[in-house]
Image 1: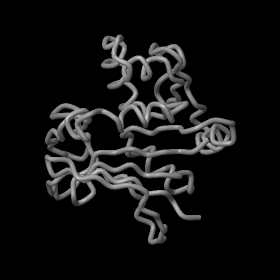
Image 2 (image 1 turned 120 degrees about the horizontal axis):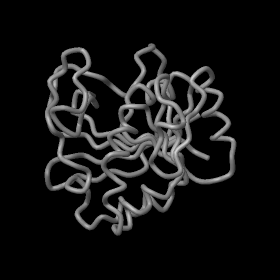
Image 3 (image 1 turned 45 degrees about the vertical axis):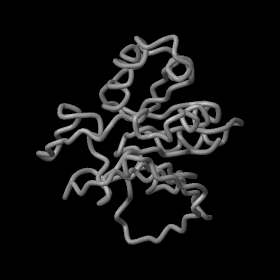
Amino acid sequence: MRVVLSDFMSLDGVAQAPGGPDEDRDGGFRPRRLVPPVLRRRGDGSDVREAAAETDALLFGRRTYEGMAAAWPGQAGDPFADHMNSVSKYVVSRTLTQADLTWSNSTLLPSDDVVDAIRALKARPGRNIHVLGSTSIARLLGEHDLVDEYQLMIEPILLGGGKRVFVDDGRAQPLELVRSTVASTGVIICTYRVVR
């Protein structure tokens, strides 16, 4: 399986709290809502359907999982929501237990060996493991060279600070641009594959 990381971010690379003012205030961050995904797409929903069709599993950190688990189960009936609710979900958390994971098909990864657990998921046959948000997980995956593709929605705003997706370790990571689109809102939607 391939790990695909998908994030909304500002032009200066901040991916913290794209969903609104109460989403993530770590480090004194004052969130500004970055418009929901459905409004930033091409307009016909085709890229949402494409991503869902290629996704066999989702990978979340605790905070993102809790937000998604509160939102998606109540939206059944929409094809994308139905996919979100039925697909396998893997959660990285030091505080949640398996009993806390009430969203269908959710599995807690062992917190003492998350990197190897994710490597084991990647070794399974299948398509994509999609990471939505989860900046801490994104950085962990980047540190251990586990990301295969980045799908970035770059918002036309500078936030001046906050959590970022990319590792700041001085290593260069070559990428290949696979696709890019500019939405009518000015959002640049880019897909980059990691070159190994």
